[in-house]
Length: 300
Image (cartoon, rainbow, N blue to C red; front, top):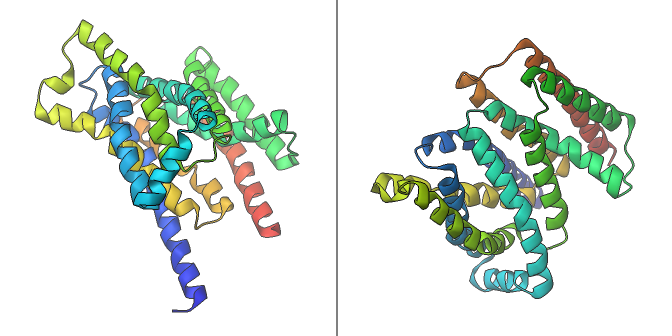
């Protein structure tokens, strides 16, 4: 096989892997609906605790036994550990608000958060890192801003929780970039940092009612799947992101919120004309963003 054929095969595998990651994230609300028999606090706690073994397996599977342990040891160094502890706070906020929103039958609103995320990243780059933005990105930000205002009118109040999810994820990514460790090793350390909080959440939930995981084996198994459901797409994304262009990743990231949005519609969540106008404005902004991404890729 020629070098070009090997490279093309790698790109194809990377594209399939990243697509699989975003599809998994897109259908995450279906899994959360499946475990809606449990209290939100228990769901969040189980997700954190089962992420520990899942992230460990992923770290060793991706990098190999010796390299994987070296990466984990590097992530546990004081400076890295402090950074990952800070990022874990915002990961916890993001996970907690997202789980709560989905289990409150507000999947469409949760999809709004991740439609806005790439546009917020552009705004953060401009505001805090002095990155230059062109007219297409400016138009995208303006349309998204108007879309959020219209969404507030449609809901009767600003979509604070969706904005908080978006803000928590954006802050998480900024902090996480300061800790250059592989995704799996980073998630393992973040989950370990949050483990005491998760145990506290389980105790809090158990004080109000018996834990769902203790009621049957099927409940326990479904809740334990929260770890692989979190770690598997991360493994796919990490594998694929090394093999495809940033432009491809930038366009594929709209797949997950689109699937979440479709899931909310399928579940019969209210979708008024005004809400449709809001999403139309945001999608128009994303259209400018996608066009600008492709134009920059061609120029490069």
